[in-house]
Image (cartoon, rainbow, N blue to C red; front, side):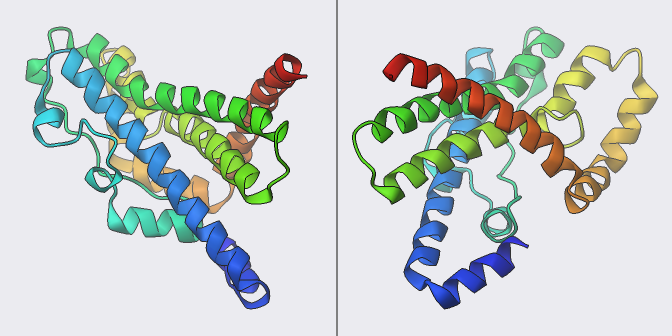
Length: 219
């Protein structure tokens, strides 16, 4: 488990363990902040100022981080942030707009993953400094993880909102089942490592694709 590995490293190399913890926390703050900002920004542009009025249209991580969710992420590798509140009555085309707002967060993380992959390859041509490359690598991988994980169509993830906004009229029973039991299903998939396998495969493919593209550019 992640926490066991951390304490083992803490006993053998405390400086590296603390630096890794700080890098992990910083990368999480970046991924969460831009993810939630993108949701709030999309909602604002589509006519709903609720998130903006609540102070969520910002990249300040303290506006988005849920304390328990942050601790869970750093310790166990999965967690959550405060959800962005959307008032559907302010949206002119709710189903379409809900899809756009829901996808805004994962798309932002995908874009950041692409950018950090490029920075990683570029910086690697300039320096061999381990911790700089580790930080950029962690930022790239974590943002790609956020992008892929959040498009899974299980409640309460963004992918669930996308699927329900498109298919709710035809498959209402399935939607209500997932809304009621989705959190439990997601937890089981996480604990059994099924999510890790699926997300890891997708993230690995995107990482190789992006870094391979930048390697051809810079070399």
